[in-house]
Image (cartoon, rainbow, N blue to C red; front, side, top):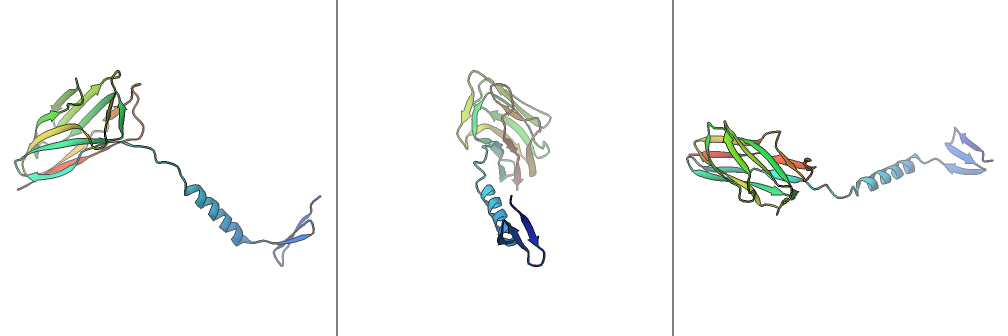
Amino acid sequence: MVRFSLDQSTGNKQVGGHMFRVLIILGALVALFIGCSESSNPGPEPLVLTVAIPTLTVESGAEVMVPITVTEFKNVAGIELHIAFEQDYMTYSDIEADCLPGAILNEANGFIHVIWADIANTLSLTDGDSLVCLHFAGLNGTSHLTFHESSCIVDVNGDPIANQQHIDGAVTYVP
């Protein structure tokens, strides 16, 4: 049988006849060490599929090509992008989508729609490649190009690819 007692006046523990000094600081250091060692090696960050629109500045009235670029774009089987722009500041003229054969490309009421699917031939692009290029002519001012919340990239099962983000951009026309 092991006996345990605490001497209130000295803070010493007596266990089985041996004296031990309670070191609260040592306990705190051990806790700090354990906490740091767990957070210092969190493992690899999850990869994020990114679809991004840049922010550009061009001369008023000029034609501008806006590339929509990607990173970590691997084994994509379906794309549904809805991009809003401000018609008061620029006019849509065309879209290039060479890497999306058979895509449905449409513009109406300040929205550009890109819809594509091919489960038999998934699409993978190199980081920084352009998925599509939008063409506009502009006036003065800034038109924000924003992804609608329903925009989505899917895998061969039709499920949204985890860890995807859509980064909005803008075109500013200056005199």
